[in-house]
Image 1 (cartoon, rainbow, N blue to C red):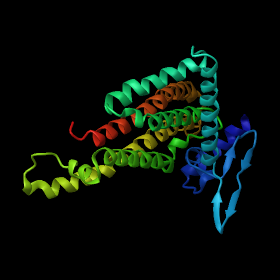
Image 2 (image 1 turned 180 degrees about the horizontal axis):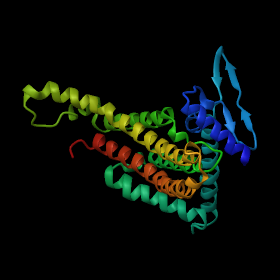
Image 3 (image 1 turned 90 degrees about the vertical axis):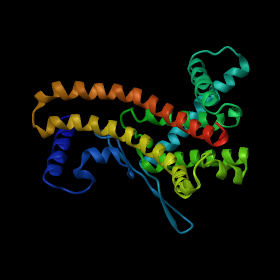
Image 4 (image 1 turned 180 degrees about the vertical axis):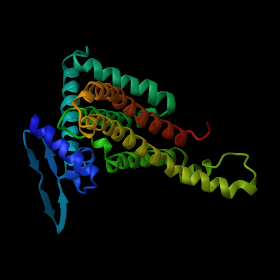
Length: 281
């Protein structure tokens, strides 16, 4: 423990002196992706780079925990589904999963999409559980929050974007969907401006989804590490009586944020789908 404290103190000091490199900025070193699984003070695992068809495909920390999240989802959800084959009365983890599924179905999909919501429920449930599992996994020591990677949130937002557009075009037709983007009754002189604004709006919605999830999950972790770093920046263990309780408070707040961000992403995706499918409303 003493060696770890000295290491943190040294890295903070080098960062304050204007040092460069991941080793000199220990906060960002723990937040950003990398090719090392850091289990200090117990050790670390260097991840390999795959060479396939002339391309280098590095296995990064976030890649590993993406696989972990996928395996957890498969294991937990399949186990719950198998129990329903034996008995329709839920028990244990099934109760919690059923509450979440019913909530996403009735309070999110049905309320925001309306008729035909069943077609989009599998995607919404998958997005909700993926974000939820990823966020909660990232709160465990020695893990990583993959939703704090802008690439991951951008892919999620892209999937929502494609679902929104395909859903709208399937219901209204390609021409009907594009025509429905422009509100009725707009004076013809403003039509070119409104058309451009609505077209840009198609892309700003998923962009906001990606940035909101990325920023919220990154900010909380930075605040926690920053509060701990005050002990070494001020070179006083007395500050720990203030910074540690504050860090614990932010940590418990992160539990709420982890659940809330899964809800917000799913709810907004469902809302945008409903707006695309039922343009008459």
